[in-house]
View 1 (cartoon, rainbow, N blue to C red):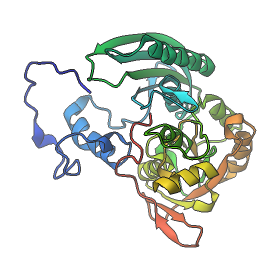
View 2 (cartoon, rainbow, N blue to C red):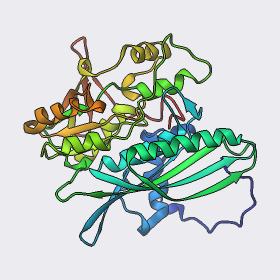
View 3 (cartoon, rainbow, N blue to C red):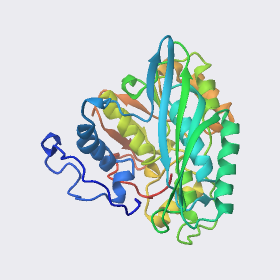
Length: 360
């Protein structure tokens, strides 16, 4: 939330350049769905931010950007974290702030090097709570092998924040020959997920509003750099990687399918969904495919490389339950179609917003 400050009138905006009609699903104001990583988020970027940015915008606008600086290729990413509650089973906003940005860099095949940190603190927040988050952030950075090299702190009036918001930006370096991006997915690719899905979203929900599911579900937040390194170590030509955070595996598969112009055929029976997540989703009326993850990745791998990549993933602690969940096909380009346990099919569409808001 913003501070209630009086500011000079902004320059006139040329709304004729915006894409209409109804670019933001009839919402005249921001709603929670615009931050959910689904269709409404995409519309906000495509129809408002990109036209407003004009020539300054790089139309790619992905989770990370690959930049050539002389003979060196760098990956750059930034992310903001507003999760509520600040501490949840298995982690806190501190771990998320590091691992989220580190993983965005890793999904480009980069080795993360440095992070910036910026804190927006609400007046009245206990210093002990801030210290707990800061210590978790520092510990996570050390575990991920990155240095915290610069930062910023702002304080907003009481009632104009939610305790602590954190922004991190990161830079990593890419090895020669690594080219991992959604557009490279092609028919015939095998789709692999690195482990149990839906864990983070249910972990956050379990301590929100006093809900209990009969068992403790811990967030899967973790840095994926080592797992990606193991996958690259096989010599495989990894086509696309993505960590399925907001919007879950469903959003990730749809984004890659649309970026590459391919179809994705998904086998629902192959999805690694732990019993606790399945039960919680059943209780809450959620689909595990749309629930957020913070320590998992989805990989699109050439069929000839799938077996050694899968073996390398399963040999790593963060990929022990890796599974093949589908493949790229020529049919239904830009769409994800799932084969159900009953033998039928269903379209797995891009979510409009987010089933569980404020999960990162």
